[in-house]
Length: 301
Image (cartoon, rainbow, N blue to C red; front, top):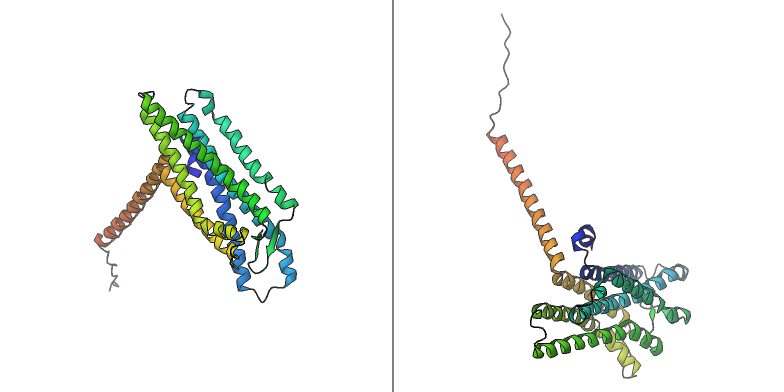
């Protein structure tokens, strides 16, 4: 994130969109860490804390819960914006105005505004509750309407958008390849297809690692089996792993950022080696330098 902000040459539309996703991951990871620290603290101090102290911390508990939903929604919608950018670069590449940075800045603002506003029904309906045995403020899995709403707005809508865009891009590429329409820019188009495939991989990372939480919700909603007592903790654990995996995947896929990180690490390594060599040379010089013997003074008789 700081590499893109520091280096002006990296401030392209693609990198700004990647930065947007990274900010969402950073907020989600920080919030998940704060939730984990609080839960661990409550587990350790379970018998010492009283209900009065518990009630005072409920406000922050609810804030952490809302931030988790907001940042997760912002993350998945940021992937949808990246998919739209790839759609423009593949099918509407001749319209230069569609690739203007200002359009995507507006899209990012709308993304964050919607991620915040879509929580209003949850807040106004008091659907988020304090789950006492887990020390978490989340929507109870038994509340099927609220859970269904947050899953639909936070996950299903952006994933459906991404899948539709991926289908349109691959269909357009195959059609124009057969007609010979991409004779002169086939490499650029294939690169766009690879990039949209990477976005799908990021979505699949979130889907697979968020699988246990989704299974608990489905089983509870269909009244097949009751969710485990610590279902939210299990879900947050997998979300934390998903955040770390997403960051690694983004760095791996963003070639310019990856190159900058490798160069930075190589420079650091060379500077450390240079310092060690200088220290070694200084020690050797000290050993080779002959020690001066102190002059003995005798009394003149």
